[in-house]
Amino acid sequence: MIQETPRALGWAQSYFAATGYDAVDQNGKRRTVSSVLKSEDDHLRPNNARQVVAQSRDLSRNFALVGWVIRQHLNYLTEFNFQCRTNIDALDERVESLMSAWSRPANCEATGRHEFAKLIRMVEKAKVTDGDLFLLKLSEGVLQPIEYDRVRNPPKMEDPTQWVNGVRINKAGRPVEFAIHRRINGGQFEHEKNVTAASMLHYAHFERFDQVRGISPLVAAINSFKDVYEAIDLALAKLKVEQLFALAITREATESTGDTTGNESDGYEVDFKKGPIKLEMDPGDKAEFLKSDNPGAATQDFIKLVIRLALTSLDLPYGLFDTGDTNFFGGKAGFMVYERSLISKIRDLQNLLRQITVWKLRQWIISGELTLPAGMTIGDIAFEWVHRGMPWWDASKEIDGDLAAIGAGLSDPYTICKKRGMGEFEENVRNIKKARDFAASMGVPITFDRAGNKPMPEPAKAVADTSEDDPEDMAGDA
Image (cartoon, rainbow, N blue to C red; front, side, top):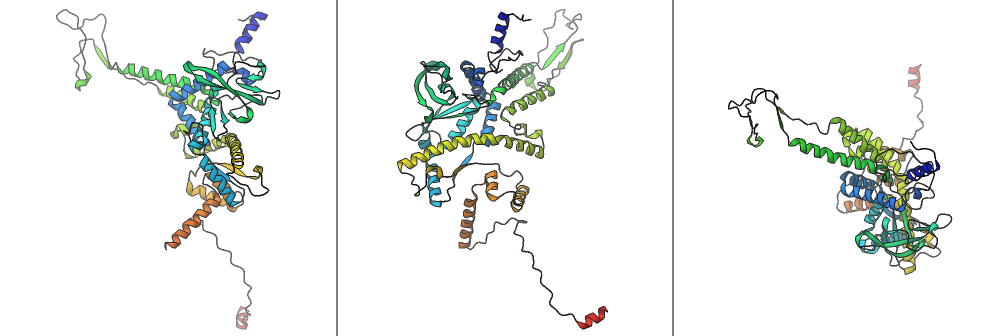
């Protein structure tokens, strides 16, 4: 028991306040949460932060489950299509053409290895495993990715209190400068240069207002993933050991072995490679075949529960991992909840893409590659990075639902195209016309009307009855 003395309290506070993340503390013991409230960056100081990053990278590198979790997250989040929306066809086509050409590996990324779509995917992965990533805007018009550990405090700082893990901030907490380091032999780093915030794009996972460096969302699940990883290894090791012992022979300790010569038996030699075996047992001996239920059903269920909890760190539904866990409607419901969790993440990526696009538009205008109409400025260029949504699960039913929503004024073709990842509405209509014209030129009748979804005929107009009453009919009625 800790006595409430100044010395004891000081020790306890320093111990409990060392870090706020269990992924750093590996003693496996529960601890009392410190009442000292600090910024998120103070909870994870640089040395501890690098330890967490090293663990998340190691898990994604060596544990297939973690690698799959990250890839699924990227699959549903990082697919975008660029669309210029100035309503000036020539300008829209020119901007989209320039963006398409720049997106090639040699034009957009400093190493020339990755196209822009792959670059964005890798940027999001770094945010998930490391917590943040930096993109340095070079004068050549390319982006240079700077990974988490390459931004750290420089060796010389005029005011160390202004630096937070490689980022110099002003009094309001806004980044002013970044200290970039290069890797040298043996995992060491050498200060390379400081760059201004205007030259750097910082993409990070933030949870608090005064947070300077990003912290990986996987931090809360690192210990769970490690436990599953180690449990699987131990279960496999135990299973292999049990397979070495297929037969157990027991005998009473006080009885003879049945050897009439007076010598003790050397035991039984069994060769399982020779096929069916018949054992002639000595009196009192008993043979049993060893059976193993490793890991047992309860252990398997518990491992699944731990995996389910770990997947929530990225809001992934468990049905993506275990497709047999639920039925179609349960899987659909879980994915609808997941789609809602993607909204803020999509906005984060769209904001990064918007900053990159504005930077490139400015460069194209300055270089003369892009000429704007008279009176138009860069702020008048409307564009959008459209997230590639999910296609229909049950196309026959969901298409009918989308058409009904459009007919009732609850949606429109533009929104449906975005939601389903089906391209741009105008482009789709143009392609349909092109297909119809081509089919007509070839003399082939073609239609795109779905059965049951053809336009409804106009209602028949009421026609006044102008015929005169027949006197005979009137007499008959009478």
